[in-house]
Length: 197
Image (tube, rainbow, N blue to C red; front, side):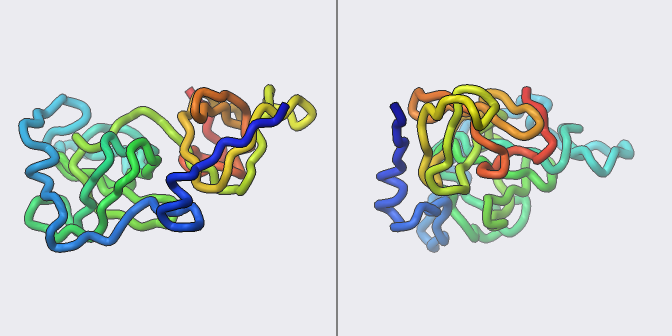
């Protein structure tokens, strides 16, 4: 029996499935409020090193650039530059949404969403837990990474699922407790040739 996984709240907000971020207003919450009491946790934060580094890796964490992360809470201010004095351009409002890290500077990470919008976010607002965004309406999730296997559910455009595993052309994701394999071409938040974990 096929099941449908709906993004009712998501679709109700915007009507078509992409309410990933909203334009910031002057009254948006400040980063000081978001990260009050945050402390440096070594590899995730810290000052950039003066040592030469591989351009394909972050200057602070030495992790690959670009790479995918997720929004830790339900609000993350994206600024024009890496610091509290920079203007807030966007506010990401969806907990667990995948974001791509494209640069690092001290405690800041430059991120972008599926549409390429974003800015600089404090590292404490990001998580290494992986998720993916379904970019194809009614994407089929199969029991195995094979289109001849049973369809276990379908996901609407804009649904976010937890990334469990990836092989060359498929990823196994969990959406509202349902688990299945979806073709990578229907997902954003994983590299085309990525094997995960």
